[in-house]
Image (cartoon, rainbow, N blue to C red):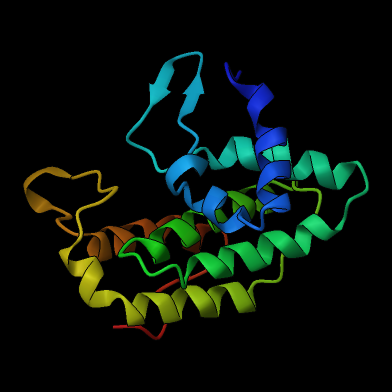
Amino acid sequence: MYLNEHIFLPMVQKARQENCLDLLLAGRGEWRIIERDMLGDFPDRPTDWAGINSLGIYEIYEKGDYKIKDELEKAIIKICIQGYDDDAYLAAMAWYEQLYYENAETAPFVLGRENILQAIKACIVRNKGKMLESTKWIYSCGKKGPYNLYDFMKIMNDIFIEVGVDLFDGIE
């Protein structure tokens, strides 16, 4: 149960009007949505992808505006070129939410995987140096790390493999 479920649809609509769906999905600046549920707030998470998808994007799609599907794919890819050290992570996590729903067969549509996967992989390769220096969004596993965003993404890749995508295949 969401305490702020009323905000998602208007935020997605506004982001579309202002051509900022990528910023909403990345949780950049004013577009960041603090994840809130019956247990409280989660300010240490980049944004609320589950709410954006299920209460915003999917609602728009189910009302017959099928363009949102292509806009979602383009927005995830666009995150990869925003120029920040966490672009690959945010694009991947925004995509993961969709992949999760697809895998559970609850998504109203399926995105093409190849373009998104190639964009995220290229972003990982391009930003590896920045990611090795970044500690954003890392949930440390104690003394064993991870200590940087690149290694954290390598660990997180296990959840992508479970839904049929390997972000690091061919990257080292």
